[in-house]
Image 1 (cartoon, rainbow, N blue to C red):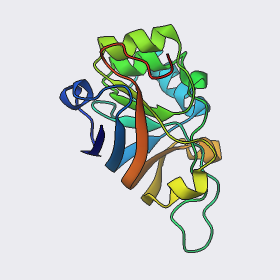
Image 2: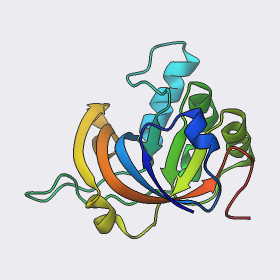
Image 3: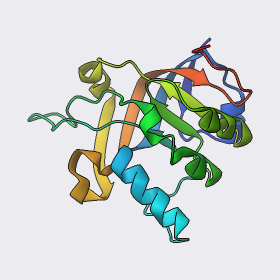
Length: 174
């Protein structure tokens, strides 16, 4: 099935999605990779407040290249999702509903997706230049010292993804 989805993704929206659905996302989401996830996880473990809200949010696992003159962002392809697996269940427990990346996820992450009524979406690796055209705004909002791995809030229009893991336990990779 092909659907246009307005972000944020709530539990109800997540539950309406099935592995194999093609989606076009429009709205705001976060961008964060390994180093930012580690910091978020450490704050959660210490019982401290996060610099972002996670409730019904989507995180795209991407480290953009620098924007060329006149562009919002440089190449914006997905990174390997399994590098975030250690931190993901804790973020899902805090309300995160959607993750976008590439590649397989651990069983612990897949179980947490089901438990928290969330979804894991895949974006096409190697298509960063094309994906960047769907990003219409980009702003660093936390951890600027991490450079390309800083947390950004981006606004997307018709950002193409496919549902890989749904909240019923279905997995497109199987």
